[in-house]
Length: 223
Ligand code: SAM
Image (cartoon, rainbow, N blue to C red; front, side, top):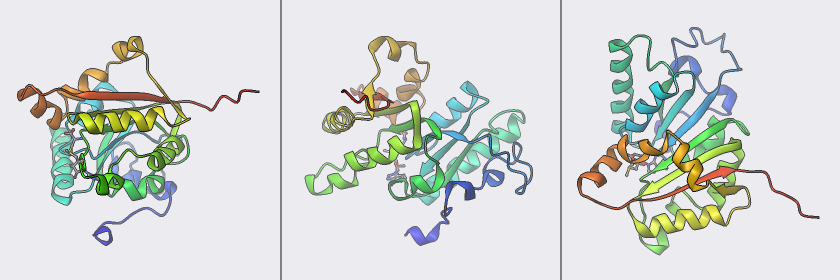
């Protein structure tokens, strides 16, 4: 249950020293100007984060994962990479948490520039739709922690869930879809399928995927 893992009482209590020890060598000297900017929600085995870490070496990023053993695996994976490549992978970490409950404990208003929801659990039955990680009320929270211009990436191999995530995003006043040209120009788009363990599985089985990628905007008030 949730009581098995600690949760910071507010974003300024998030332990950067623990997560990024080479970048924040002392717990009392955290440089507040440098904050986590990417969050991979339900990161699973961490393949996306590992790829993003070297693609954006100056950006701090974190995976949030509910399963204890999977989180431990990702931790070990990152530590091993840091040992093998001492100047790399210092900007990536993972935390065991329930992202549906604790996002605002970790991130301040407007802090994030990218959020990833890649191959989330589908929760097929209608009575369980409230468990889906994209929903109108959770989008309010994601809009809060994303800065204006920040991007939310979603992908799934479950068509019904893909339609649901897209419909939730289209229906939210603080998000707009990226254009085809913008998607084409974004180097992260290729990773959604190729870097995640789940995406690789779907590709091996020749499955189709459904993406919805939206930008955080400000509400335009028409007078
Ligand atoms: N994103 C990864 C990928 O594409 O390979 C993993 C996808 S896996 C199907 C979904 C992951 O979300 C699982 O590892 C699960 O434990 C995690 N998860 C489900 N609910 C969660 C929650 N409320 N908070 C954090 N992680 C969650």
